Length: 268
Image (cartoon, rainbow, N blue to C red; front, side):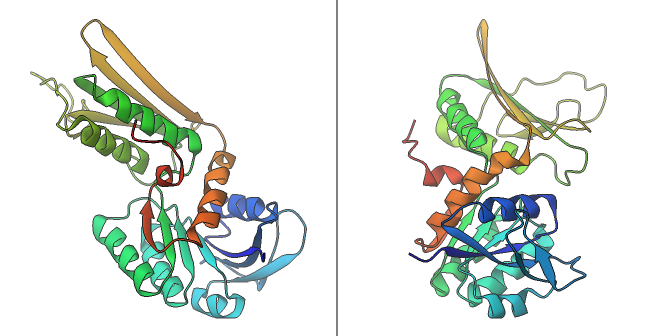
């Protein structure tokens, strides 16, 4: 069986470098090209020292030259959607970790992948621990009336609340079947003091050096609280999920949203 050929979009970024390193070390995968808007040379040395791959800012040319099976994208919304369109048209499957995609974007990715006969996996978080945190929060959501989410990230994260926090809240509301009870604030001494609100869940975002990616779900009931917390201290935590998605997407068609769909978690 031939290794899955992988193109990394956003290859010079921190996540792109991590993905390249993980792909290099998996015998079932093969890095074949690197794309980045900041490319200033024609090739990129692979992190494990095993060789180099073509590097360019021109995604379309590298798709044609390198013929990848999968494009892995960890960039920004403005770059992800044009890249997804180009890759799907070249019959390249998609693994996307970019956050901030709208429902319309996801619908377009689904239609693109089905039209061109490829798979697409989009996940707001590729950390297995984060996926399990969301799963456990959905189970607990059925038994508590009050819930809040605190998410903490490094100061360079561009969106707030995080995609993981929003996904968690939506999953909890769906599992519960109705909104949570949101305690009304009689006097808000500073605007936004209770954070953002979604379905009765207050979501608080912390941005500061010293954090990587952390989230705590707090559920409250009479005389008790339940806390479910996940701490990610290194981007390497994403890699098992990314590698799993690369291997699954080549045998899929259409959009799969969320890494949980690839795990045997049951219905809780």
